[in-house]
Image (tube, rainbow, N blue to C red):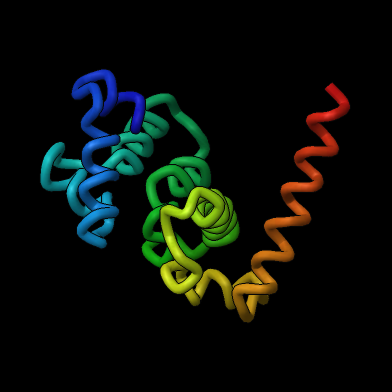
Length: 133
């Protein structure tokens, strides 16, 4: 979805993210107002059009709003949401308090230090795999 928005409106996503960070509002809300759909919704529409499995359509379309997903796809949607949240935390785009508590509880994550340990293990595993290439 981000690729589609960027190809139609170069620099729009960067401007939206910058504005939202300055104002403390969710970027998806401004994407909806300025484009009509957010990038996740656009991505889900494309995935559906390309006949992706429904669990991937749900993961693409709901990863910013994980509690809105079909319950049978909760595991994949919550996983994608958490992966995205960890990335956003690493880039200082969100704080721990902004991560959905229900998703954290579903993964058994009770506090910020526990999530930091998970993130560090994932980072180390990534670096180890990358060094093999």
